[in-house]
Length: 157
Image (tube, rainbow, N blue to C red; front, side):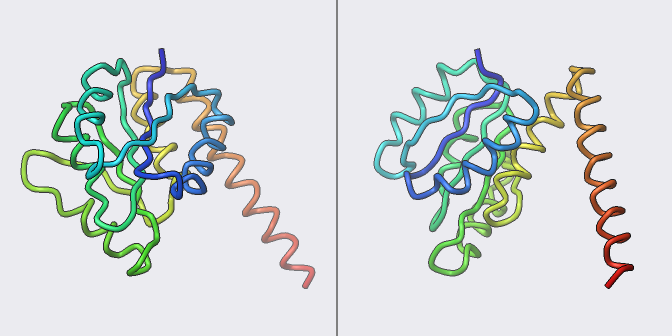
């Protein structure tokens, strides 16, 4: 059983999914992956969401980016939307995701930020998992070390 289901609106969203996948690999998190269109296969979304045991959904979509909202309309579990750069540099997708109507919220990360969606999902899971909490602390510590090392290198320029 996976704690997270990632749903792509189309195969073209794969590069953004790869960013999430890289983070989940670091944290050894299993996930389910699906490609389903909010507009072309809405009944499939409902079926996947209703039958899922996942605790969190990540929806990666561009253009009208209806996918996260359609998922949220079918569950009370957290949905994280990832807008994908497209016709209007991703602004169209970003606004579609963040402007959900009252009562059906979707969390939204930055355009093409699949890695932040994965980290947000891990943070949610870490609320009930001390091992994940510690892994997140270590991950952030490594980020801090990298910046400090980069700063030391910059002093040599």
